[in-house]
Amino acid sequence: MSADVMPITENKNTKKAKAVDTPWKTALRRFTRNKLAVIGFITIVFMFILCFIGPFFSPHNLYDYSLKNKNLAPNVTYWLGTDKLGRDILLRMMLAGRISLLVGFVATFITVVVGATLGALAGFYGKFVDTIIMRVADIFMALPSLPILIILGAVLSDLKVDPDIRIYYLMVIIGILNWTTLARLVRGQILTLREQEFMQATEALGLKDGRKIFKHLLPNTIPVIIVTATLSVAGAILTESALSFLGVGVVPPTPSWGNMISAANNLIDFRKRPWLWIPPGMCILITSVAINLIGDGLRDALDPKTKK
Amino acid sequence: MVKDLVEFRNLETHFKTTAGTVKAVDNVSFTIREGETLCVVGESGCGKSVTAMSLMQLIESPPGKIVGGEIFFEGRDLLKLSKKDMSRIRGNEISMIFQEPMSSLNPVLTIGNQISEPLMLHMLLDRKAAKKRAIELITLVGISRPEKIFDSYPHELSGGMRQRIMIAIALSCDPKLLIADEPTTALDVTIQAQILDLMRDIKQKLNTSIMLITHDLGVVAEMADYVVVMYAGKVIEEAPVLELFQDPQHPYTKGLLKAKPIINQKQERLYSIPGQVPNPIDLEDNCHFHDRCEFCMDICKVKQPPFRSHGKDNHKSACWLYEEEREVL
Image (cartoon, rainbow over all chains, first blue to last red; front, side, top):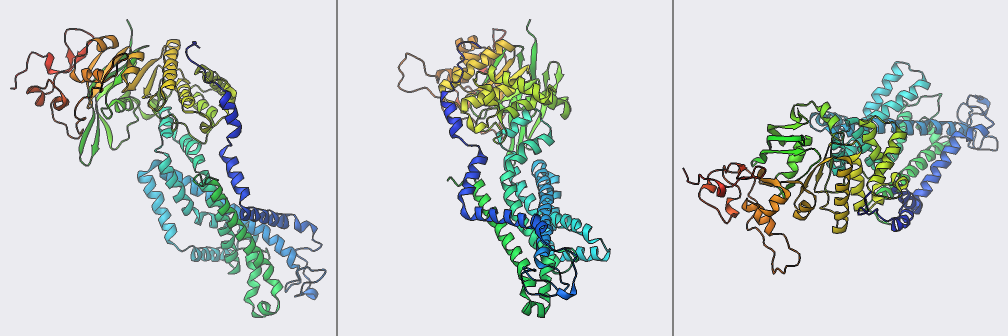
């Protein structure tokens, strides 16, 4: 190195490096400062612990039928009472939570993979690729999703799919039907990002398209993806509950919050035995509110325009 | 005899707009020799960048299109190469530095990641070897603490450092030609000088040819071996740097040189060339500079002057002032 090329002195930068946070640290700080979001987060963690660890401490068994104990009100042995077959409501509620949370998260994962990929492809290639993908998205958006889900659920029932496997079908169906919102958002982001100079630079470096999309463009859209995905977890849980309530989602004997509240369909149960449907109903309410609080918190935390 | 590295032959790049065709690059020919720094000078919008982009084949199409001519790189016509072959040349044999160091780096990837990328792609290094080479490169461009910088994100660096990183990325695969599109325009004067020093230094070390696009004649005087002056999509003068500064021929070049402040000389006002660059849409077949030229003759308004040397072999210009034939036919 010749003497006239001065190395940039580092003293001012070492100080700066300590003061400057990574974008993620800043986001985390903003998120933890949002009380509601933190409450939401703690609630979700609590729900997970309740549903996934709680059942191990239960003295009851999921398949303990005892008609002698049917329709008991909450008491010392059965904390939340029993249903019409004498099964413990608390245990069923916890196990149902596993299913509901799992459906919510797996369906969202599928939504993210499908939506982000298709949105990125549409935004990056433009022209006819964009036209095809976005018109298909329009078609998906134009179709009312609940009737379709009910039809697909009915088909599954007709094919006599095993209840355990049926859950996975349900995850895929809910996941795939939701891809359009995310695809649109990602596409919009990619459209502006690909005109940035750093993308021209990747072109000048001779990078391949796949690398450009998945390594250079998609990481830039992660904030959008995280926020949308979080909110869509709540949506997926609600959809699953609605379907199960209608009897075309998760079907008995596998418990889910949705098919547990379908007990409220029965007028006597609805009026005389609120312990049958209030606990799962509360679970759905608390979970979806908590997830939405987290989503809002994340949106504020990841938005670069809010400077706090 | 120094070998020719790149030769532009009658290159024509047009942009189709609804208002008409813009001939951004109109019949441009010049050569870049090995180990030489060639400066392309001209006002904004005269086709400097488009010429460079045509060489890299990074013209957005549509609306842009290379409609004619050839670009030879080491004897191969780049315009005839397949997309795949071309992307093997980009970043590997020809690389490019952009004007805006602030936006040329991807904000979500670390510096190291971005320097290693072309190394792993073109030189087929594994991650470890790429990291070693990347750290060497960061040191080469004069940044201390390369290991620390390797793991930093672009927003943690200053503009000058980012431009150095861009140079490091451009140099990563030992390119034969480095295109620098106004690399110092966005930087302040002291950093400008450092970056130019760095580029000169690297050129000497690696014997890389440089195609430097600029509108700053100070930069030209400091860096260039050979200068090409462009106006409205055409080359109007080319000469070795000393020759051009001592004896400019085209009135436009004269005007540019006159518009430069001179040290130790008090000037009330800097000279400026009157008028503006003509609207590039559907230009007529005349000297595009005629309405701003103080020596404008009748023939200038109706016919294009030929581009050739007038007396000196390596000094060419396109102006009727130096032609015998001046009558309007």
